[in-house]
Amino acid sequence: MSRKQWGHGFYRGLAAGQAIDQKSLIGMWFHSRSNDGEIQWQGRVERRIEDGTFYIVQLYSFLDGSPTIQKVMAFSRMKDWTFYPDDQAMRYQYYKESGMTVDEIERVEKVNRLLIESRR
Image (spheres, rainbow, N blue to C red):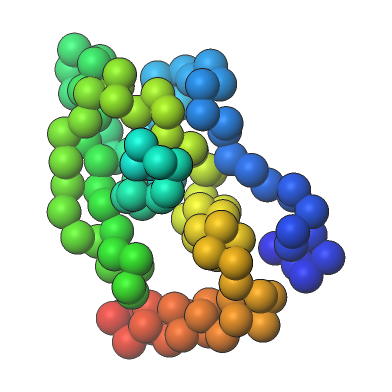
């Protein structure tokens, strides 16, 4: 995402309440929200359990982006989540809601890249 695109509504994810195709959720990234609208969890939808009403989701750390735990979630609880096609779109939405400047985001992303490289 370029500086020009930042802050201009370039990407907003799938809005809460928007029609969601259950099959297309696999591989999508998400933010769940608390009752007051704050981001609660961030993660990725890993797979759908056979009956189609439950999913395995992988949660990721807000501190360093590493995988933390997996949870089984009912689709009915996921309907108000915001979904993104990739982790970058998810992270940038978090940064935007946190009120970070473009310079702060660039520094955080640089540290994230270094962390990812150090894990290899």
